[in-house]
Image 1 (cartoon, rainbow, N blue to C red):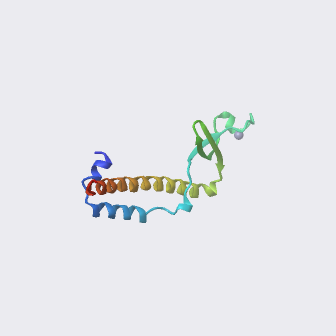
Image 2: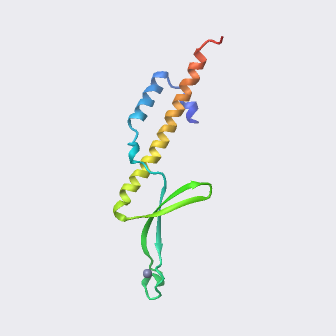
Length: 120
Ligand SMILES: [Zn+2]
């Protein structure tokens, strides 16, 4: 079932409670980061190194961010920052997803208010 159809079955109060719950559980905005982590295994170019025989170095983690259509940027994430970056990316996705859910609830509540209001 589509989310918006499911919402239409809930009471105003239930929608408001759901909205409040979502807003309360939003991760802190200052701990968010848009992007993805990508794991890479690299060769160093030294022909006598083990990586030349297939035992590559790594993992090396990169934070990759899409800047626009076909434009991305990436930077190495040092291992001591990896957990923080991972957590901030999760927070970003949760904030984005929860704002989308709140937005859908508000759309449904607006639709109901429009219905209630008598036309001039
Ligand atoms: Zn190597």
